[in-house]
Image (tube, rainbow, N blue to C red):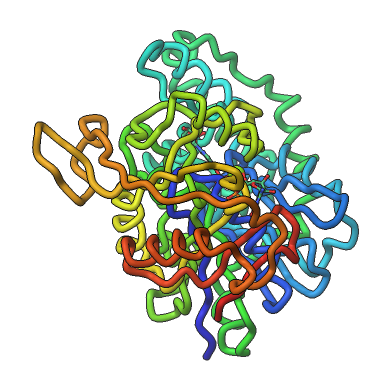
Length: 417
Ligand code: GDP
Ligand code: IMO
Ligand code: MG
């Protein structure tokens, strides 16, 4: 029986997971999403073509790879259908779990209303309804994709849910859906998505028995994980490797090689602690050179330096076998490159992620910069100072950097083996 390889984000998301999943999908039979929703934005660049994927797994651009969206994902049928329109021939190579929860437009309205009510304490969510959809799931009032089999019954349940929570919705200014329009909407979803909805758990077991090569695609990043991230400034799902089991119905023994994705520097979008954030000119230069604007919301990403402390935490939580170091080229031309090696908390130096990262100030080590790594495809051709930087990072995080990415293009990827 095969084991499934796993891709997870090691920072605050947007590490470049889409590029690596697409690269690896060329040698895998199945690519499977296990968590998150259309808050994710995974960009894939092939020649002149740029694709932004939110819910469809990043294997879709490889004609031979089949794609599974597992039960751990929250699916907005409306957004899924829009995303599907970019691709032909999805029949037979796209499968949606009947146990995945449905995210409906009112979840997004609730998300936005709650963020507004929080004022200065807002999380800075994507506003897509992720928290409310997972909230309904956990409090056992959500609806699953399998319920689309009977749109009338589902409509009645949703209307009953609105009646039950009327005072809360009224306070948030969220209107109840109109019964007939809701039924039509659900019927439309059933017509388009019905053929793709199946028991993906059974499917996972079967393809493992058939020794298919399977790649599991994480969304978001470890520091956005509901348990292991910077709570409450996190997303509402288990983004770390453990989430792959629950989100697809497989067990820990089914997991194979874990590749953690990390930028050669660090970014975060939304609010919450980010000790190595650079508020000065260098942070601005990282944003400019790295085109650090959100794929999903277009928001400017906060930029700063590689945080080796948070990285060690992420490497351990995920059982990371190797790291893929992305966007090395974005550091091209910097005279000096900094790395956060420890934190100061209450006057004490620590080398782990504390309870509240808000209290931590970074201690940096500086490395000599380099001119150009953009487009380099083998390790030996990298400038010496860039190689020194990579080897130093490996020592600091205690894990091999097996993949290095030097541009958005598929081919500009160094595989060290
Ligand atoms: P994801 O959410 O982890 O898939 O990452 P995003 O797609 O949100 O953000 C990563 C961005 O960096 C995308 O625009 C990629 O095309 C781009 N990218 C990926 N790898 C590299 C790289 O090595 N160099 C540069 N310059 N850009 C990259
Ligand atoms: P990918 O898969 C970066 C962030 C939001 C916000 C917090 C909660 O592209 O790496 P949510 O809408 O999930 O309730 O927002 O999480 N966030 C991401 N940041 N990349 C992502 O996904 C993200 N998905 C959510 O900005 O801070
Ligand atoms: Mg992204």
